[in-house]
Length: 193
Image (cartoon, rainbow, N blue to C red; front, side):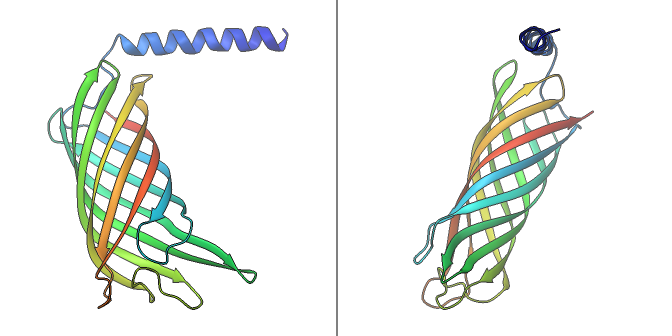
């Protein structure tokens, strides 16, 4: 079998799988668990912030109804990154949040969602001279998040999605009290029946 034929058969199988998934109920329902594994580009929106970098996260939630879920989210976001005199300076943030999410179905396989969260943010600075947005030391501060996004469910219990999230927390500084950053995230989701 040559490579073109293998690719053609694989594409046909994938299209048939997606079509078969579209005929069933492919969205999370009440009492099911949903886990999202994500990777993101993150960028601080405060003074002296450098180029953003990457973030990783895990979100889990239990569906209370067919539209509302509550759960927990944790991650590691590098929100400012630069190389100065051979040293990589970075500011990382570890959010640990309780989240509520509202899903709105727009097609059999597609849902839009909006979420809000509250919890704590641990700052992990590796900075040489200048604080970023009032953050200089490692600390744990209260904060919150808001996000909008979409999910495309395929193969029954799996989905892909994207999300834009805005995070904010108290920096503990007298000069600038609110530290904020955004994350543009891509998620892989699994529904646990």
